[in-house]
Each structure stands twice: as structure tokens, then as C-alpha cells.
Length: 149
Image 1: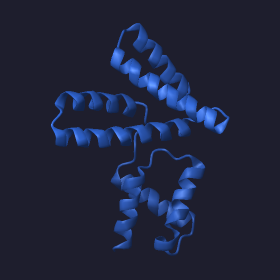
Image 2: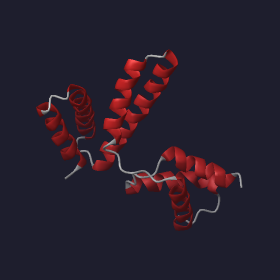
Image 3: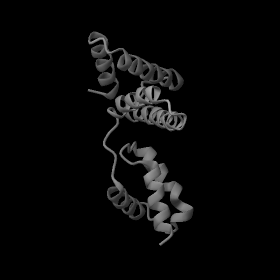
Image 4: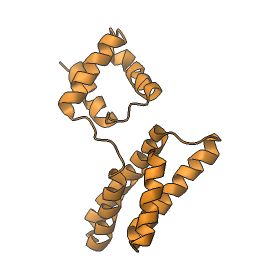
């Protein structure tokens, strides 16, 4: 079952179970996926859908931080629920140790000699291969840590 099929099935299930909040979240997500399909003129891949979800999770996380500062707890709870629903469709991300090992493997595989000037090659390879389990921010931190050694 593709990720799109899973999201659609969960949307239908939320409708049947009268879970309004979840239904609204999934409906919005399906609309974003449909927009991507229109934009690219082809069915989005699981990697495309994961990218959409990550973008939405990032936006929700920013909203949560603003709501925390404004002390709007009810709205914050709604956003936390939205984030948990969206994150349920993301693959398990690599932890820091796995990310460091992945970075070492990529450096050897791509024969990188100057990490500072060739770091873009790693990101390009990740995008080309559709690797969705690497957290970009964590990878960037690992690269910076390696550069400071």
C-alpha cells in the first residue's frame, strides 16, 4: 500500500468514525498532495508525499512555539494533535549515531576530500536516491561537528 493509499484510507476511516479534527487534517494533507500532482503533472511518489508532510510538520512546529510564547494552551493542544497525526506518516528517522555512520559512508562512497566545499554532493545524493530517513538538520549538525574536529 502506497503512502497516498494509506492516507486516503485513514481519511475515510476518520469520516466513518466522525473524528472531525483528524478528518480535517487529512483532508488538508490530501489537498496538498493533489496540488503537488497538478504542479508536477504526475502522481507524487512516497518521497514527494513525505517531503510535503515534513514541510507541514515544520510549519506546525513553528506555530506551536508561537502559541507557547502567547500561552494559548487550547490552540497549542490542537496543533500538537495535528503534528502527531502528520508524524504518524513519516518513516522512522535516523538517530544521531546512525546519521554520523551514514555521513561516513557517504563521504567514502562519494570520495569527498573537502567536506566544507563538497557538502552539497551529499545532499544531492540524498535527494536523487529519495532517502527519507535522514533528518537534514541533524545531518548538517554532524557535518559541522566533523568540520570542527
